[in-house]
Length: 429
Image 1 (cartoon, rainbow, N blue to C red):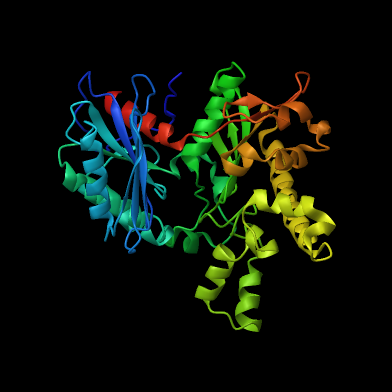
Image 2: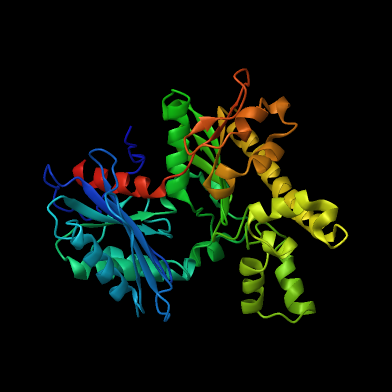
């Protein structure tokens, strides 16, 4: 079943684009990072993916482009791509070589992942000059991401000026969080002047997974309450009531919330003041500490849950009298403890929970994390079947026993399909 985008929001006075012809059913999804471009071509008529690929290390001597056509052998180009313009031009050439160029009459639009949409962009939006200027105005809220997103859009517009460009925002799904949950308890005028509030991120993943979980249960998303745990190198939780997000763990930035690969997640704000006053760290040093040298890597030196579990399992045989295993175990325990705190809090927020869904790299692949997060929560109706949980599959599935009051699901996320679906639905109505 081809997923439909969330229709909670009315784009209002957002710019419009020509309605695609009946044969224009494909969407090229672009995710432009600071030094990379990921892309997938998705046909909304049948869900097929004629091509995909990635350009990495843009601006470095060892740049590379890996292009994977659906009906051919992968092709890799290793050469310097000076900027995103060169990278996207090379992507367009690879697509054209397979008869899938940006001038193809079957291409309806390009859908761009944009990290931060602030409070204005609450739905997918056709990009014009005014929209692009507003996305640039939001750069202070996402200085590592929005500039690259803007560059990707600008470049794509130059490559084919007549092709609709649609921005799909990571923050959009979380704009239904009520004001009492979105507000921080600081001076209102200061907060409003500097746009300080909870925005939330990973929205396309939370939207897709919450809806897919309802489908897995055979129910209408409007009747289902889901807690989504998106656990990757970046990690976030959301409470979704009847298809609408009512709480999420990330805040003004993606730093708040769960323990992540290199990010601290929640901490006392006074820690920053303490490090400045006592350790003499300036704000840039604190920023680097909390975003790049904290989380799992800060606790044990590894941000890969597979390696952490290997170290735990090695125990006393790690060659360091068990010290390596103990650090790994501490990191795992801190990670799971924070996860359980949010899980319990979101049960309280929702009141009734029909399912808990694990997704993203750790959520989909770590049976140990899932088991530890749910262990002992039978009082909340949560339980995991060990045999089901141990099974490895790329399909959405339930890992709770049939008698459990609350379902526990593993749902592989598909942010590219969500972006394509939202883009296509916006243009076709």
